[in-house]
Image (cartoon, rainbow, N blue to C red; front, side, top):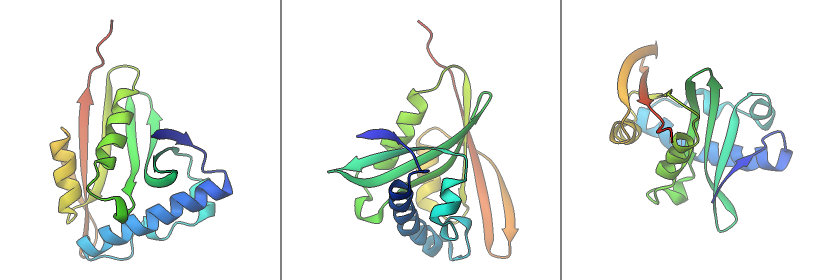
Length: 155
């Protein structure tokens, strides 16, 4: 079940941070860089980030999270994370589909990930995203950005 969650709530922020740290530790290993912003977050920084969060619950437990910021017709996916014990259950796809299905018009979805994170890159390409560019952040760390334009069917 996917529901909007309020990270200003201490308990929910703690649950989100727990999923985030577990998920991004896997990404850090994949890209061989452990100094990435999601691993430096705290409950407090999550609570102040200004993103809208949605959680995917598995038997009452937070198993995955997606967060977005919407500006005009741009839906910026800031975080898409699944707890490692729930990998390969289709949770990331369900969260992404949820965000896509709740748009209000012609929108562009944007997202970025570590350039060496081949599972995420494959996931976004398979989901219809197109690579827009790659930026070197520092030695050994590059970020690849993607976008997906979509049109809503108006009835």
